[in-house]
Length: 336
Image (tube, rainbow, N blue to C red; front, side):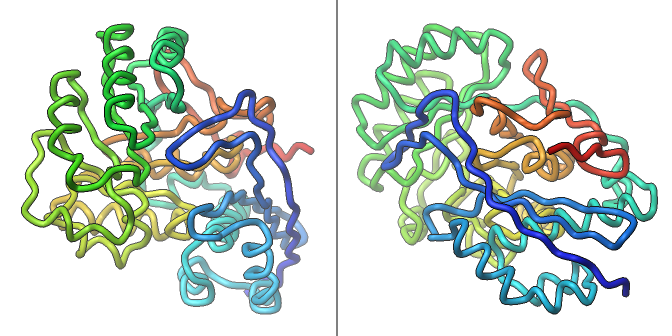
């Protein structure tokens, strides 16, 4: 196997405006960018890590440095899953290996993954938690959106007012809500009833990670998606029967390689499949776009929150997301 030269760079991404979810407000997002160079071709991968697991830039860099020698000797994507645990470090390296192979073979990444040529994907556009009127105005500003995801905070009455205001402002769109672990099982009946009244189509991670058993026997007329409870391939079996949808995020599971495996396993277990994202540039989002080709729901809006994205980047038009091979893959253009 060809020897590789590995480089890792830290970047701080600045958000266009503060973004609030349950328990957190974000003004910036720190990422790493990994490059693998075989002397003729370069493969790149970007990762944000998982903030609620302590998987930040220092942790990702330490993980990568711990296996630098093995990686530079040359490694396959399958072998990488046995070298590093799931998380941002593996996601960045996995993405770099996909792009490197794409450039070495001249084949686009979707073809290497055994998928059909990609199509634009309807994506959710996310509203950070704020005052109901402010969020309703934000929903109107997403005038091109077909799907909107609403961040909640676990303040039940206020969250219901937020969703009600947004539905009144945008009666035409698919709506989902994301509890980000903010609720307790005792809140769920009232929350679900209000969401049914507002014609909400998905409730994501209402309860805290670790409280999955609270959903045993609970039946919701609205599908419930696991996010923080759904990290890796190993979580699929335990979520079936408690949740309806597995939200795959590549920073959680460790990359597109495992993400594709999760999608197949989740379907076999009777779960719907969603691809989500952390705040990232189009380079970080591109592997999720490939995964989105086999998903039921797509949340691929991360780059729209940045003051400046990479160029070329994802294209958002008429409620869809599109990522060409010029962003990541055999035809990708590397820019500073």
